[in-house]
Image (cartoon, rainbow, N blue to C red; front, top):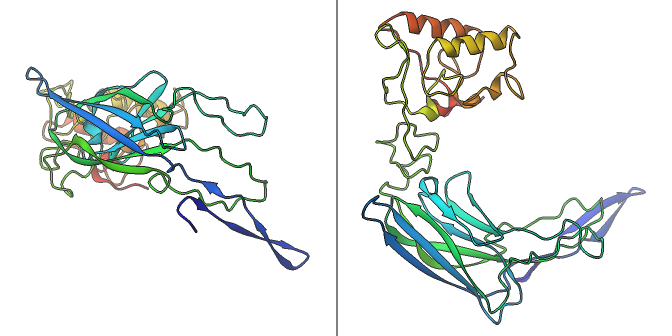
Amino acid sequence: MNTSTWLVTAVLACSNHALAQDIPDVPLGNRLTVSVRQTVERDETTGLYRYGYAVSNGTASEQSMRSFRVATPSAGAVRDAQSPEGWSFMVSSDGAFVEWTAVGGIADGPAGDGTIPPSPFQIAPGATRSGFSFRSPFPPVSVRFHAQGYVRMPVYAENQDDVEIPDFEQSSVGGDTQGPGSPCAAAADTDGDGICDGADNCRLEQNAAQADRGGVSTSSDPQGIRPDGVGDACQCGDADGDGRVDVADADVLEACFARRAPCGPGGVWALPGGYVKCGIGGAPGCDAAEVELIRQAVRAPAASLQNVCPAFTGVFE
């Protein structure tokens, strides 16, 4: 194996003999040189830091640049992201990085071979593109960036299904830049939203805004509008997604289980707020018993529901 290609061999059975068939090399997107110029400005009014990046693809690069990634321990707290024309933005599902990717191109190449040609918005060798930016509440620290070059993937036969595609970091180049850090120790921000576990009102679900529109309704607070310290993102029993648990949630669940009203695509798990917020007593998951549990909690001034939904406990079925 060399530094620029992976060779994968598939073994096919035919007439009781093993035949080795070479699979075309998987090209890597690391044949480029990249430099990044960053700017960091703090807005004294909002207290937010604005991070901006200008990315240059070196003249000696053999590929156009198609993707740019910045690692940060507080990606979940990023907001107001901006992208250059023809580029899309995303935050990784684990909150570990932000990434921009050039969009465009045609699904089937000019030769009709099923490959995707380069996007016209990619950064050509010798060119620079600015306009990559976002805001964050956290000050800058040294972080890693990665940039990936465009490659035209080979066309594989239907029986060549054992192709091992290298991951992004293997198929890219990297370097150092500035990005938002986190005031938390590495293990003290479980959901990666930039809010330390000790202060996070939903430590298993990303909710950098820490919205808490209420809690469980009682006779003294029938609408449940008093915040209870449990964020909207993990308020167990909140079937209608308004951040509170009241008779309306019991009605939604009851109608759903009685098949009087749709539960949303995919069944009860797709109620507003999602499956991760269904489970307020006994075990995670939705069932008809939850209707009565909610009604009891609403009727009894001192009663409270057990927060056992996956968003609160991290237990998934």
